[in-house]
Image (cartoon, rainbow, N blue to C red; front, top):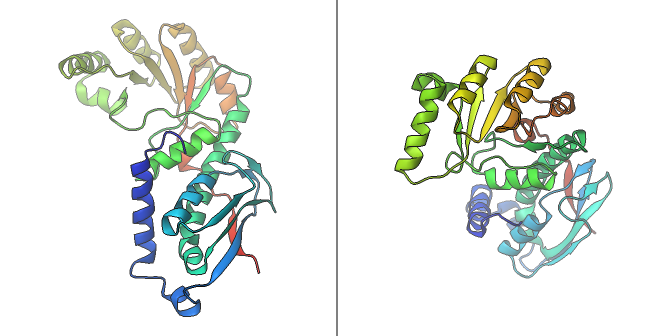
Length: 284
């Protein structure tokens, strides 16, 4: 779980458990003695890339330090139906109380890692990076962006605070592309910032306006048809970074990459990811 803030992880586990357990797991408390110990296996019931094993260990340890956690797979491994990712042995009440948070989180993160790996595979051998977006689940962004990296793709920006992105609404609200860029330069100077600047363009006219204004990092070519996208990349001619965005799918991503763009951003890595079917089963 490198590059994920430890305080965030602690906050995530604490509040997720509070949400689910509340005043107590009455079912387990009623059915199972307080000193009972059980062993369970994390069973994979799907094919994909697994993510969240280290996080699951951390969750179990947070709930009860006295655990035995045996891993058979690592985060980022390709898994198949019938694989066992890990075994966990601990207090039975702790196991059942923690089960749902572990499964919900792992299934979601593994789904993101799986679709990210599929996108990365589609552009293999081409000098392009697939980027995620801010289209993440509120409060789960650090984990979901970690899963994107596990799957072999890359993070764009963590939030509104670490990269400037002038999109169509910013352009329209500020009175045009040149106005928006110039205002950003003044804002950065006034606030002693040195952030990367992406400008979204919708057509070749806007592209040329950006090129005439200059002073940016990257040009986002939004929803360009392939012939126009290729022309736009040639027009930019490496003066600035180029990025394709808008409706990117597994079926179209390679042809888009072959136009020569430096980056392709896709919200699908997170907002369209499914889950990887997993189950935690007690070993009798």
